[in-house]
Image (tube, rainbow, N blue to C red):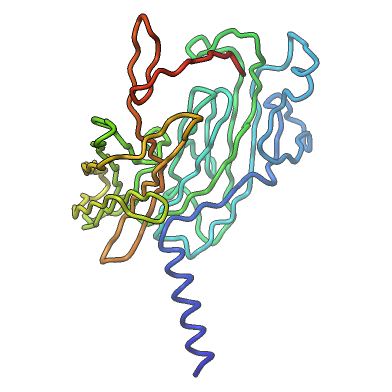
Length: 310
């Protein structure tokens, strides 16, 4: 009987863990080749982060390769993931990335310095190997900044790639690859901070879903503010939730002198159970600039030192 209870607890524990968001790093075992390499076996195995300019650009050559490279990877999608939502999150690829799953083009991201996300839920085969292809191009594009610089424009997938698995209703990943949580400081003084949390809730299912949005502001292990809101998210829609709160006598962020951050936990619940969670830092501060006296942070003068660092 004891063994049966332990087994049930393990099963329930693993179910609860997977009920929330799960991220799997996909950096290893990619196959890379340049687009002009059409011969069989001309590619090579690489791990991310990766750039094809690690050799030619570093020796100072002005004609280092700027063109297109292809990254391919086999991804096994577990059968138990069916009914979830699956996303590919790229932290950065320079400078145009076009993403395919099983030969279906999911879209293009233009710009080398921002993250981007594609949902792959409806394009994968469950319980089977799936093919991911990412075409990356770092050739000069007149509509993508920067056009020139005293630095190299390295081509490749140069940051992490993650598979993100969520419940059908989640805190949105696809709003320009943001966390889906925006913390807006409406007014901050030494006496009080008025903050609004804007949360984007996405429903990928075919039916409307009632959910609860919970926001907690933590100072260490102490909750200083908490708000709850019950909403119903229509099928295949995104709902924007706004929750406002005030913190009396806030602990202000003060640069290097006192870089204090509150911790904001945004939790999504359905039938009282957690289905998604996003944690974000919150640094409260106020500032102004005086043409004669310079920059003031939290009412005190702060001398700024500008730098140019790549």
